[in-house]
Image (tube, rainbow, N blue to C red; front, side):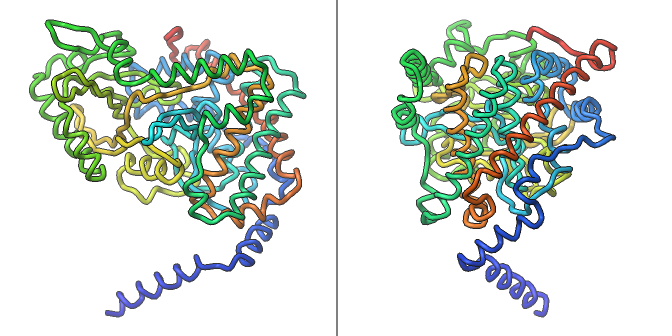
Length: 478
């Protein structure tokens, strides 16, 4: 009985601690400046013992060995592609920087290519964070720094002048800060429902872009609306003996039968059906009913992205009804977040559930097929996965084609979106009070972004040197 009473007392205290007055929350934010003054966010001094290549090689041990060289090859393409794959080294670097103590649900990998557009359940094209492999609670400024530094790195790759890059970095951070201050004045439910509609965004920023750029954007939006399971069917499958089969393009796309040629196909698919049933049980009832309409046809491994290469990512071809209605799902391996050594272990035992919970918390409108599952592989190793729809109006802006004015607009969209995501999980009033009304935070983050871009270039060169010396294997051109 004493144990239950003690637990109840702790719960009551925890609940009371949450019910701070607005004045208390403002004071909490301002007090955080004592731990990390706004200007201190400009600081970054590389740790003498840092070893980014060693961290990447250690991370590779849990990945598919034959795919790891592809990851390294993709990271070598440019400093920006290196940055995309180097979330782990940067997490270690961020852990050495000043922190405010104001925690939110972090994306964990908030570079500008991990924002994009997709279809909402109401069939509107919305803009949001779209990658949550590393999501975990942690210091809010880590996401802001990862975003700002990505803008600096991408701007350099695109040949932008230093003055233009500075304006882009400031645009992102100012947008984050002013959005957070606006959210602090709004009812929490208004914040929860806030989202960025792509058509509305185009209308808002139309005057800041040249007519040619507006037309290109509208063309990309129109193309995104045709990017669905039917398009994936034509691109990823071929007809064999009257049946749709996933194409074989090793090592980037390989049907499961080719990966495990010595196993009986019937046994493989029996196991897959069992795994899909576990996944269905993680969905809410109406969506579980919808998935049950579709029948499993085939499974294949597909190499995706840059940082994710080597993790086990599967595409699942399903058909509904009379076989004319395809559905492509993606089951992606979820490993512990790169933030875990620095922010603490996840409360979720299943890493797929960690990803899904973080996505639900950060996104305004999410994938209706989002769920998680667990699988014991042919090698006897237990692995966690999260599942989502493969194609549903997905739109990723080609960063390498951006000009400064376009990236500045895009940076503002990313900044607002990240603030909205953080305002849902963190104390938006305390965050707003910490950030303040001046541009001190903006300038400090912009300073950090350029300093870290310098470090990123050195790290990219270090990886190239390791490959040249034969210490790291890399496969280019894939």
